[in-house]
Amino acid sequence: MTNQEMIDEINKLKKEKNAVILAHNYELPEIQDLADFVGDSLGLSQQAAKVDADVILFCGVHFMAETASIISPNKKVLIPDLDAGCSLADSITADELRKWKSENPGAVVVSYVNTTAEVKAETDYCCTSSNAVKIVESTPKDKTILFGPDQFLGRYVAAITGRDIKIWKGSCHVHEKIGEIDFDKKLEENPNADFLIHPECGCSTSCMLKSSLYDCNIKIYSTEGMINHVKNSETNEFVIATEVGILHRLKKLRPDGKFTPMSEDSICEYMKMITLDKVLSAFKYDQHIVKVPEALAEKARIPIERMLEVV
Ligand code: 13P
Ligand code: SF4
Image (cartoon, rainbow, N blue to C red; front, side, top):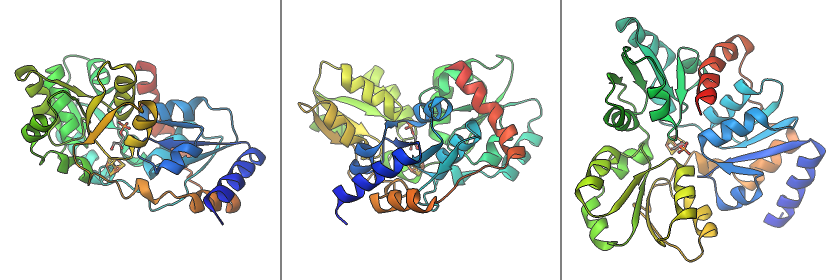
């Protein structure tokens, strides 16, 4: 079957099943082009909560499909490949979080949305990269915060808010490595570019501090924040520090733009597991259903809904 034949068949089945296709900004170009909505973790959660459909076909990683199942329990949620995981979500378990909480009684738990449903069920507030600062600022000022699992986002949020934050030592294997890149050399090579950095990058806090020392435009953004910045920027040169899948949307948005990835090797192999043939099989054979058991979903829904109320 050619790609176009697969796309036609997918669209036919999507209609028959009254389904929507949601895709993350890191998905393959052909998957992004097929989707009804492409966005960051926050945008995808908001869409999953409000979308009017019987089936959500989630082109992203497992925790994202789980989040959709938690907030839309009456919809069928499909993920085309069950092995599409996330190294960051794997960096904390519910048992580890329970132990951390017991060592810090009275602390407020803020967990990144890149976590399993079990971890969310032990969490007070969820956050994403686009709202972490806002969420932390919305918690009572006198409370210690346990922030996890991403240490780099945690450090960034602590530096901005000045709050008493204990940080879990987890990380994303793709973004952590971006911290090892010679930032000063990139700046020398791209003196007129805006530098857009994802807060999961190992260099996010040092980059933020550099922006006040150097004469350059460095911004820390979620993936959708980067899209919005590029859409509205007067510049047309950008250095992008995140997974390279986002370049597809950025280039479509600004054909006049010069986009330089901070690292061309920043590829999330989990996101790239979602392919056209697997999307077609997902619709054809109703696979793979992601359903969080209701007793667990009830607990995991609380921190997600708190987050969605704040933003
Ligand atoms: P965003 O919410 O910024 O899209 O990030 C999700 C993610 O998995 C980053 O690696
Ligand atoms: Fe997880 Fe990193 Fe992939 Fe995002 S890029 S889904 S944080 S492994």
